[in-house]
Figure 1 (cartoon, rainbow, N blue to C red):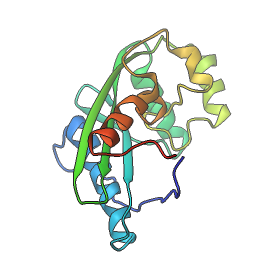
Figure 2: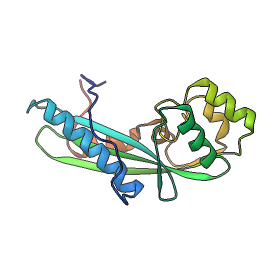
Figure 3: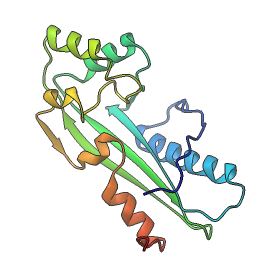
Length: 172
């Protein structure tokens, strides 16, 4: 378990012509560095991640309102898309590691009623691509190829591998 959870404040605006894969890793790194800077040199293991939903080269937003969530669902339903998890670990000795995890998600075609019920739930709020696979949207996903944990928000196997590769050991 983490000793502390910090919410980094970073600008999550994609850069002009930035591709989803680079964007996911850049945000994870920026979040880790923001926390490191805030801790002002305290020795700490810092783990940061960001989840990006991409449809082709398009980066879908984190839905903050119903209209955005509806646009995301309209784009994603009936097709496959990628969920990209950027992970960055900063070790206390200054070393770092990064990884990108890609998962392919197939979303079924949604009926108007399914779409409206999901939007009514509010579960989409703050979620990349306007849905949460760990909740009601699980009913919309007949298949994934890759890490389920990545789609939820943190690719655990890969995060622990990065930590261990930098020398982190399970606490006693």
